[in-house]
Image 1 (cartoon, rainbow, N blue to C red):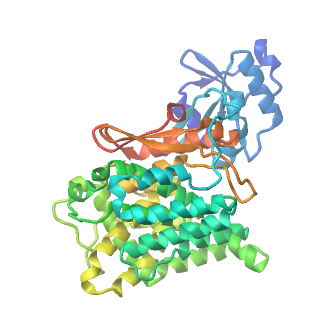
Image 2: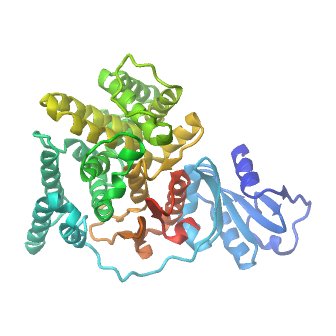
Image 3: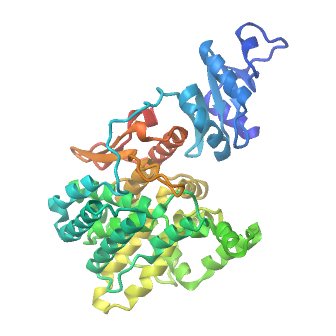
Length: 498
């Protein structure tokens, strides 16, 4: 109750209307509000959502209040409460009050979702039209052969009526292997992203197939980078790194590995799948603590936090950046960022864990290369490691808690902000429950002068229960971005952030 009161007072400063009798239009409500509230010259019927189900009496009362022109707001103090409100949000058109980016956020009701869509359903998880468009991009000439093979593979499967998730999975693995060989990794495989698909199809993860989700993010983002590649190289000068690395390679590792920490987040499900019983909280915590104590992860925490501080505060850079050694004296802000990474892992989320997993998988491979060939791959992997965690709102909360704020500049962390933007929108409504033919919510990214990336969405493709969550995700991302129209700028559909 205390958090609900705090949210209410922050978003709608005012006072409770206390009366002994219920009269007038209030009497027609099936369930009386948690509070009748006056803020300024407006009176609100305030309902409180608790648990993961909104009682039918509250649903009825919200509908009645709307018909009587009474302003309504539902306070949803946690994620369970938001999930309870979500299925009713478009229909009831009530205000929702919840915590967004560490502050009270009031979401106003939008217009109802369309009941039908004119968009063509895509038979494949990756839109083939998008692949054809990417193949013709001048900036992607180094990837053209791989993109062409992938597109031809899709067409062959479609012509033979053989396209399904398994065949598409194989096509995408082959594409990824070719990209990694091109980046200098002779032993090219994507076992780690594929691991997520295996966990989920085994019932040990979640209901969404994150393997395909990651490739969808990758190809949508690849289009944006191909339109304005210079904006994804500007960080090097801004942060005094002076690196000359391929932005498409950085994006590949950022997008494809951003969810591979999912297994560590869902370790309880994995224990249950193997042993038939779930791990208790102490067992799961011990696994995570042991993971964080390993030597390679200790190295990852040191290197990632050091570079991340530089990219979060590029204006403070006075010298070029060097890979830190173990005996180097560390600034307090680096230790705070490292603690945010640790906390994110221990609090059962996956953003930081994904970056640590990427580092642990590739840095040992790089050290086995010829010395003169190591620097560029190290830079690519480390920059991807610094970019991936920011898509996870839990990680952004950890940064706010430990560092006081989470402001991510689009010009110094372009891959991080692109991932957070695309990841908060992309949704194809196909999951492990058997939905096989569905339109994408995110249809394409449009890039306008000078460097504004706008999401074109098909609102009718969005599951009704996801509308509220999409609004919250978008607002949380916008709150963490530091962006200007003159530089790299991300723009959501107005109804998601208005």
